[in-house]
Amino acid sequence: MSWVLEGMRVRGTYLDEFPVVGTVTLSRVCYGGAVNHHVRLDTPMRVYSAIRETVILDHKNVEQVYG
Image 1: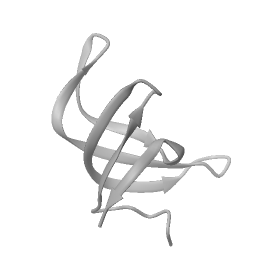
Image 2: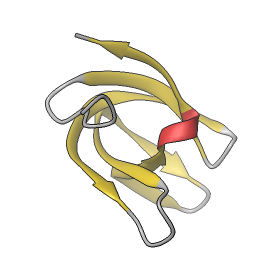
Image 3: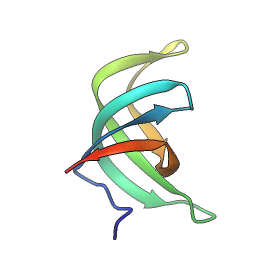
Image 4: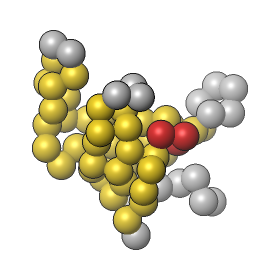
C-alpha cells in the first residue's frame, strides 16, 4: 500500500506552519478515510508553548519521502 510510510523518513509541514523532518513510526487510516502519520522528529521542536518530539502529520502535508 502506497500510503503506508512506516520506517521511512519524511519531510513535511505540521499544522500548515512548522517544517518537520523525521521517521514515520505509524501510518493509519482515520475515521472518514484520511491518512495520518506519526512522525518521530530528528530534532525536538517548539510548537507554540510545548516541545514536541513526535507529531501527527496529515498525509496531504507530506512533501517528500526518503526511501
